[in-house]
Image 1: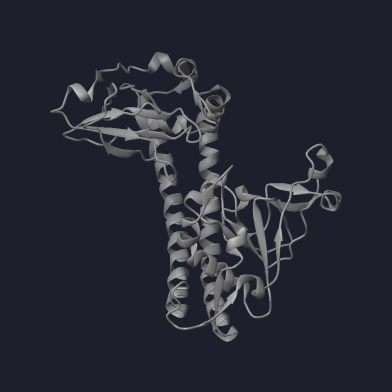
Image 2: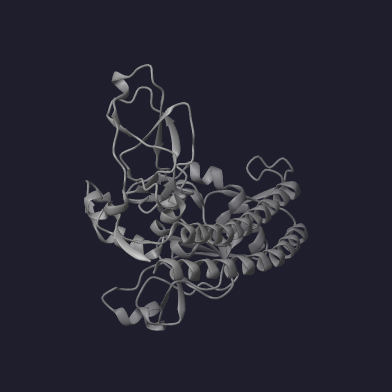
Length: 381
């Protein structure tokens, strides 16, 4: 393996075009998506007035602007139209190397660290990587045959990971479908269930808080301190950060009993997703979250899935002030459908059976992810 600088393998040469001066040519602009996967959005660029650079099939695009930095895409779309890259991308072309091999390297933790270490401001909270600096970053170059073998292995493992994620998503959709089948649309309430204000159905609704960062000893405890970054599954058993009993005594965060419903109320993720989860263990939460402790008339499983069922309606009201957030004063006034507890239990039993299957799929996903991470480290670190 030979280590080269990115600029030494990059054969890219820009061919600038100006759409406003080429009215007879149809352009497709590769633009970075606001969320989800790495796949760029394709925009018709017939009326774009600024100069753009032509890209070819096999070119590699590195996003250079936060918060979407480190997204990587290999141009694989052949078109009768001329394709150009938006200014959010750094373009790499290296025909002697497998572009997918280079793309996997650009997604590695080591390369991500380099990209994030050299960011500069471009106004407001936006930062970006400087192409001239990125050009000096090292790239491990192997024989083409070895590159092809590495791509084959990584693609296979990644396909397994994607398959397991799809299975989990299908199971989540199955639960959502079962909810609507049993209870109808929770907003229009076609089945005529009793409706009760959220605050009356909960024993308590708790906010969170952050212990003083001037006391680093507060953050070396064993009590999970859940924040939006932990809300990636519907069951929370642990968190990235932990605090001490002393931290709880000296801050606004409190112990949330297990089997409560946790919800993110302030985060950029609320642009497209309402994260909710049930905590399987006692936890604390930060100020960007709320915890609902259900009363005797409503089951935790039902309440969490009710929140997911009304997700589009909740997100439609999200407003941005200093951050995207839910107007929680209004949210607490919402009416919740309240089917008889026995019917709620039937739904909870169904969810329990699906969750048993999800545990097995999640285990397989975790194993595949561990394998993938170890391979990435072996090949690129």
